[in-house]
Image (cartoon, rainbow over all chains, first blue to last red; front, side, top):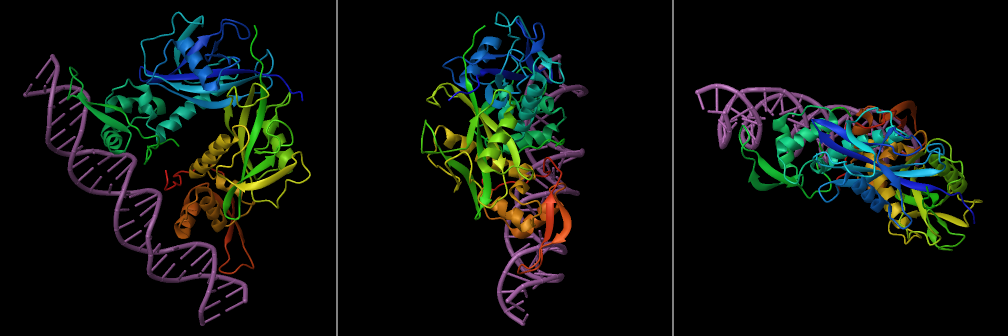
Length: 224
Length: 224
DNA sequence: CAAATAGTGTCTCTGAGACAGTATCCA
DNA sequence: TGGATACTGTCTCAGAGACACTATTTG
């Protein structure tokens, strides 16, 4: 039996919250096609490699940052016959959520890498569409999972968590109602007992991500 | 530049509601590997074919039923190196929701095909996992989209729509509350003006699927 | 008529949002 | 002390669920 031959890549939508905005990690392509243009980080799946393993490997190679605390999940696959001029390439897109780390992206594979606010960015291949799908996935996942904590360091305040929601959804949220909601929804966050120090205002209690897989009841965006 | 070579397939989780149960279309494999075992329908993506096109083609070939009224969406991709003994095969899984049609699956590709209630079915490859992911997708999509209508004929009663929810979620739902909810949620259903005739009891108004992409507010399952 | 199914009204409870008010830090 | 931020209490409104009740058909 004969069948067509494909290459398979993974592409990564790596999101973080920086400067109060949702930002995505882009790399400038160092080889053809689309040489010199901005694109999502990614690369070919190796001969004996699982798809999530390939995604984690590319994430480590491109960001230098792996370890726990973040989150990685599959978005979807894209296989238009014309999406890559080199031939038939199917890409499996992954979504990574990371805390705001001290600007990595040095000494890596890619010629250049940088964080950019999400939006219509004119990326190579079909990466604008993949980015849009990844951003929408992230937005909706914050509604019904405690995943916002993946954007925060291991211990965080309720205010920091709220600022994640405000950045990702592009909405302002009442701090008092959010506080009550976050601390009363089972499994959303768990208190560490510690508090912030040296900040102006009353010290804030520190929390870790809760164990719930799904928030019940969920938080709902206004917009949809 | 050299990179590993893959085959790409599409596999289909074709769901319908029959006899008050959520059922999935299975085929008995007519060639190696897993000859004679039950599996999800699917096949190789052709050389010049888009992924959704391949999914629609396989759906038509395996069921003989295409046309409008149903629903097709991507679930995810599966690419474990050991998932297919023939070599490196990545499969893109699609979810199809169809109304209960007069048992098709005759005169087609597959040696045999049949509807089976969903569950742990001991399928070939990693198809049990793909099926589980597809069923969970369908269950959650009914919460926040008007997609339950994809399981119904073009015109249907509110009671028929409710029975879809009961079958897919495995819960009983209060008919009176469901009726109010379905008819008052914008874009969920739209009345045709016609009614059923010849049935016992008061005639029921007929509806079509509404135009909303997302239900606001959503319906929520008890279980999660 | 009874049986059956469709559809409405109404009550209660929960949770979201608005926002006053209290608590506890820094300068 | 005042300014800032964390946190709590309380009110109101919308929607889910329970369930009594009315409407309209078949037999």
